[in-house]
Length: 90
Image 1 (tube, rainbow, N blue to C red):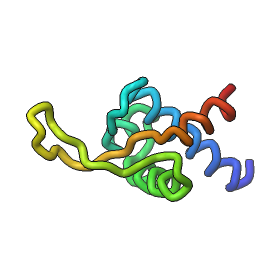
Image 2: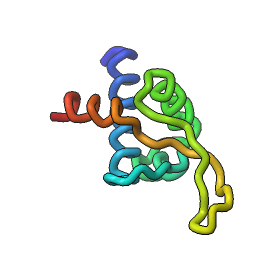
Image 3: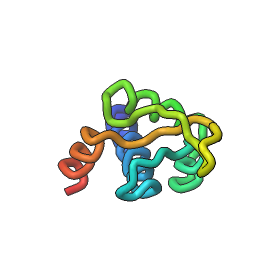
């Protein structure tokens, strides 16, 4: 497998994991939860999330608690990201 295929597979796994973790909601997820979900190091997930953000497939947003306090920052899938997943994953 060449490096481009490995990168593509990792991007697909991260994007699919974000989509699974947030479901049909417009919630955001922390990279550590994605890392736990696909069982890879958080630093890889963070790097891939930044690349997917640059491609317009993920968005970096603030995460709030139910009482509207800032809980941190995370990623949510964009409409373009969901369209990409549907085409890519079938």
